[in-house]
Image 1 (spheres, helix red, strand yellow):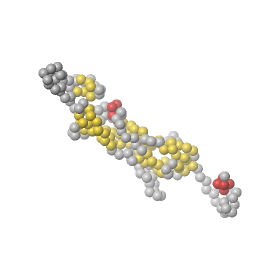
Image 2 (cartoon, rainbow, N blue to C red):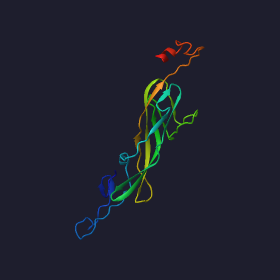
Image 3 (cartoon, helix red, strand yellow):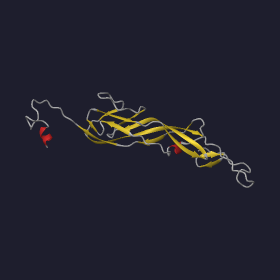
Image 4 (tube, one colour):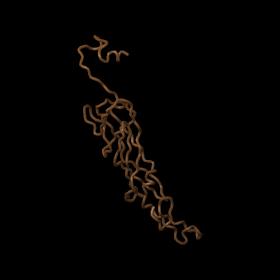
Length: 197
């Protein structure tokens, strides 16, 4: 915070009470502090912003070389609080999404993505190149505004970053064989013995 010419209360600058306004007698009520005009980034990052939830399709498995779709349903949210006797409403808006696909790769998008239609191309997709278990996650970056006692919306300094849930995904590799018999007629054919086990 820059130096306050007024009294520093927490992270807000408020005017000090004038003569006779400090409760020193005379039965006068203490002066109400000036309304907040700024919320710094350090405080914004500590607000109780709802964590985003992410989804994947297929739900918890993937195939090497085939796209897996990811999306989130996070939207604008509101937080109500009281600061220095003033009713303050905070509006939190998701701006971008940093995806971690769990295999050392990721991407940042401004779109939330969506569950694809059957046979459709995912808005946010990833093709895994190795089989195994991975954990996918996302961190959402939010901007904020605040309104004091129903007044105009004022911007909040900086951004807040909130991590999502994690999704465990089993990545499988599949093989394609051209055979002239099925596993019923030839139980020892490609992959038939493994299927039997």
